[in-house]
Length: 180
Figure 1 (spheres, one colour):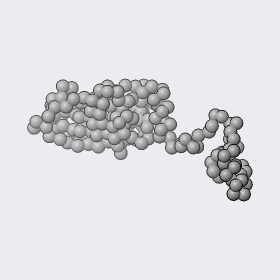
Figure 2 (tube, rainbow, N blue to C red; figure 1 turned 90 degrees about the vertical axis):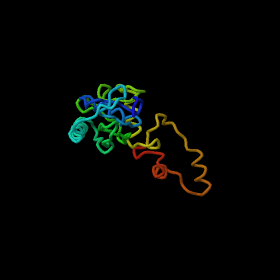
Figure 3 (cartoon, helix red, strand yellow; figure 1 turned 135 degrees about the vertical axis):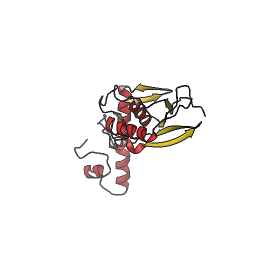
Figure 4 (cartoon, rainbow, N blue to C red; figure 1 turned 180 degrees about the horizontal axis):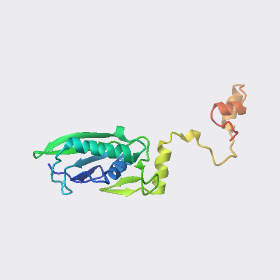
């Protein structure tokens, strides 16, 4: 079997020090699989001690990537052409952006997958990931325009003889407790 690198596949003959960068990129993008024991040309070269490599990568991931991404990383030994390779599967994480702890939450520490390459994320991409995963809903975001009217809602409440006051507006989430 021969592999080709793609947006969701990365090939490494040995577990190199920057492997965490690839895992961060997969977790921040669409997920993917990292094959250890496969040359860049797709030829299986094998891994001598799978257990040692799994432990090594697991320690690197646990110690080097923030926030914790270990629950999204899986390991599977496969035999191809009488050689043992390690498939490291990374799911898209739910607490993005993931970053290299030593480099921090900035473009030099946050990576994304672009085609077959792993690139530093832009400031804009980092902000977008934070917004997508921070738990804030659109409805809870403060409006920049504060000269708002609620005429349609007031009309519906008036038809039913229900007061439409500041307390009702807060209950409905139209106004925050601080009046915004």
